[in-house]
Image (tube, rainbow over all chains, first blue to last red; front, top):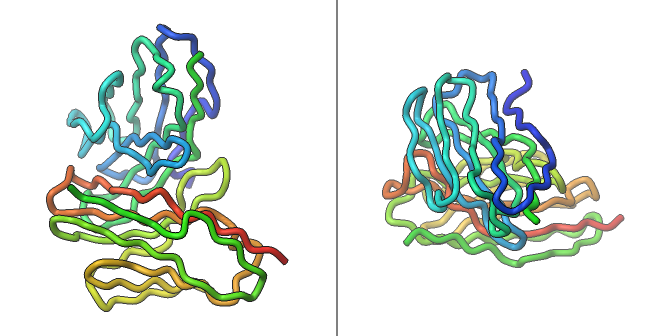
Length: 113
Length: 112
């Protein structure tokens, strides 16, 4: 099993550009998440989804959008990139939202210049 | 507000020198406490889940324990391959579904 796969692994964006970070999982998990990790800080939840067609905001959603059209895919959209969005982004999935471990992808390192 | 604090920020050990990492937490109601390992350039990898005070779990040289206010990750006779950042996270009844509140991590270096 591939688990959680994120693409791309690295990306440099100019201020004002847009992009989509891709995330797919093959574990048939209902729950999927997007976190960002900044140096010296804990991971922060951006958005999450409890199933296809259902998404909700996490702790730091501003500047991002998500969609969940299938169980497998949970893309994260950055509109009008800003330097504050320079970070490492992790997608994760879990079978349920309670008391089950989350499986993480390898991350996307994004730099906005 | 749910909060997780890990200490120390960094820990350097000699191979075979046992030690403990601390995770103190404040939550409205604890669903579970999770330990993850993160290698440089990689995503967090699940280690343990603890649900109630007094619970303990072991995996190779690692042992996780839980009290009502904190968790410890004990590392016995560590090897260089145990070098990584160890992340603690909590899931609370008051938070978003499935959301994990992470600490900043403890970076462990084990020298041969």
